[in-house]
Image (cartoon, rainbow, N blue to C red):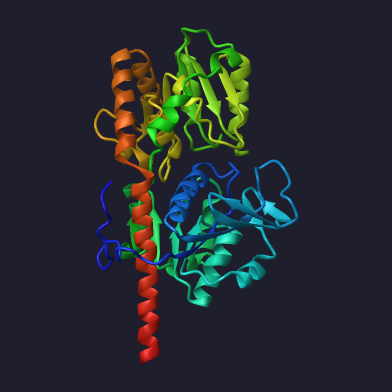
Length: 411
């Protein structure tokens, strides 16, 4: 991963022993929720490292745990990964977007942060915190998590709201952070100034932490024959994830079993999975609601993330770090993190995905090369390096705002 060389921004940590920062994160959901997919995992990795470096981190979020149960009506305070997390009462919600009436009071009681991190887009919590930051002159970093470009559902409504209600979120941010060069291009195409946009990327887990989980009982649990190859998908069961391509691959490769592990995002895709599960007996849906299913990766013969659009793709990083051969579509941001031979990159196309799965399952030497390559990619792309870049962006944002304030006070 290379440093972002955006003009006007320092790429050196300052000074040798910088004072700790007070950082405010705002997000629509937080751990232990898995309703938001990989971004919650990424946030946790960042926060742990920021806290370990002596920074103070506060988090404001909803009480949403998943897309099925009613969120708790009582606010609560928890310590997660070393951060003080305020779960605000959420009496109303649409999907993962929660209405939190106590947000203004929670912000008023906070110690003023040096910088805020708005982690998500088009939800009441992040929109409200961004507005508060603009009013209070708190610099903030905006991370749209691949949602800035309107797509999938209700595109016309999103465009209307982006031009009105959500217009100030990106415009008022001191910096915009994205997970890949692909996402940077999309954000700039939507009108954000290029000088604001920084490719921070995401990290891969430590291979030593994941490769130790290889002794699982997946075949026994699901009655999968010992010689049958296993195709694995982990993530939200949602449209745009390429799950229909995996179902077609399983249909055309009769000896293979397909395991789909993740929460139902209520897009209707789970209906296709259930129908295939009943029809073939070789499709297996596993609900995942809390901890990342790291034990599943080493038990699969190939992991596939065939999405039509991912800002990154944390699950592919987890699979690679576990030593599982990885196939990703060229529309996933993580594709740019793999060098030649570290993953199989395929077009977002049904025939290409099916051919890729067939090729990997049919070639033991290729599987071994991809397994080794994935581990090398994980060793090269650590979360410590990502945290370095993120902290640099925070400090640059805070120092710019301080310099501007000082100039205004002296004028």
